[in-house]
Length: 417
Image (tube, rainbow, N blue to C red):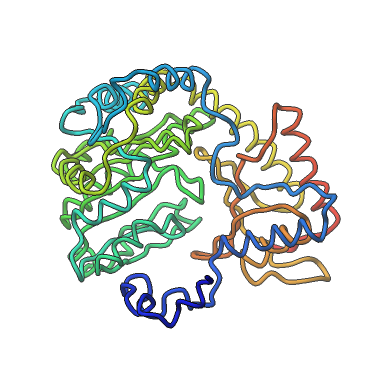
């Protein structure tokens, strides 16, 4: 039976208000990524013989390192690894603490009380508000950004206050823009550096400012750091926890999804303040039974080999160079980020003597439907589009071919900025 046949039933009237109540599923607005999906399908139908170049994908284009895969196979074959992992194994927590020390120069993390694994970062972001948010409480988050933390704050009856990331401030939030009454009522401050989608990186000075601000207003800081080890051009990986006082005010979330090409493996960790880690562990214990032990052991193997991530970063850095040069030759003002695999570019205002672009979404739809180049639009703080250098390409020659093809397709119009 179809969904529509049940929309007048008791099930429709029983939905929770947090997901729309009796009107759940009847909203006719189309989510941004659904629009992209539809545009891609339409472009493929209209131009079946032209390659669609997907620069919108936010996940790695390659498999995990062969050694990690082999370690998984080895551990999966062991009978002792078959059971529930609950809140994780000591081997993984120790590896995570050592990884923070070796890669990020974070000293003094106790693997027993200050680290707990998560089934990727997304579930951790979803669960952490349950540790703190009561109805009416406030979460502060940046836009553009990943909406999950705000979603769950709202589910719990809380409110979300957003701070825009602006180019003139190097895409760092201006904490002085947060009104005094909001800061006094806030429970959580969510940050993400290197940032999705802007690619911006934080500095030790900025993190020190965050620590001081959090102590002044008694706000817990959650730093989501899935791209933290993917840095370029001499920039050292930076952890929020490396800044004095950070562990007093919050935690940091790490994931192997992006830095080790392990998106589908679903493994990461929360580290930092032991009281926050304990609260998250308790909430987590009521949500899941832990990630497969063999995956945790394979991840521990990977964390001990940060050179795997360094090689991945070298590839993304090379691709960024190619893409930035190509876009700038067409009139864009693209700037290579110091971290992440995202390139955040201001959308043109239009085409000379031709169509206008009223938003990043307008431009993104043009790219997909007419040039078969898929990107992700972001209009939360000005008209921008996000390119990702995780496009499919086997080897450097293929990378150059893909970027050259983008440049060729866009060179028949003159953009106005």
